Image 1 (tube, one colour):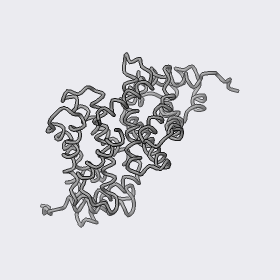
Image 2: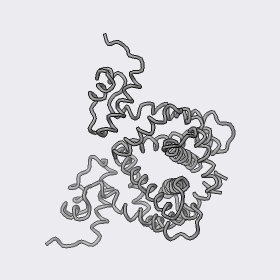
Image 3: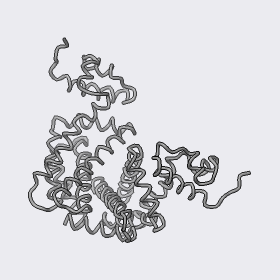
Image 4: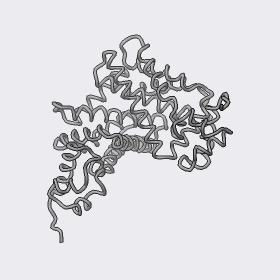
Length: 186
Length: 186
């Protein structure tokens, strides 16, 4: 019988980032992550399929939040619908996640394989949003443009949110970035 | 002495796409591509490092065209500068390339590894454009927004250009897509 330790998942995530930052993603083993967290490998594998999953866990929830925002939006304006998706997705990035997100991004920036994985995640998000916008009656081209614009605002907003010294909430940043994009294209 | 055959490169590209479409990217060998083109493997390797390079050759020129358009632009309006980049890049997609580009996209859409490679290419383009816009004096956030918007217009425009039955030139489509994006965000 392995005793259930509350917070094991969070401790494993923190330990993994600590090891990835210290010796790189490739140089880190699951055994080291578990040891750093004071847990067993068996416990690790109850929470994550492999070490990469530590960085990409919650991806379904992440995408679902965007799609829920699209469904919940009122009116027909494509960018207003996308803005609703962004507001909804901001719930995935509360203040207590900021330093973890920053450290995670440093790990990803250092590894081309992880970058490809992250790009694929965002490309999938764009495709899912395009589909959801078409289900709301938009034609393919405006649906794709609105979805890609949403991902652009998300990406630029995320980079801003994790910048050292940045203190605004994620949702405040998203609103500012969308306003800046509107001004650029006006 | 191997006799130089004019057009060998183009014949290899056409042969590769024919094989990729018939049996998939993974199922195709360089030997088969060369045989289909009526050429030797040795000739293949004078033109391409491997079979994947057949699909991604010219990437430096592709990116350079965008950057040349940024350098050639007059004025300070970020989106006007990006529009200049798009007009410049359209030179990479003349009418005689359209059917090849369409077939290439079908091959890429069928292979996750090739999709990741393509996403990495476009992400690199976005980064290079962001840097070029910052060299022109733009702050990081508007530079990133303008660059990503340029890539969005390119991606949506490219999808439109290779659609069956589409007859407008690439540059005409890019202009229409940028106008549609402006209208969405107005």
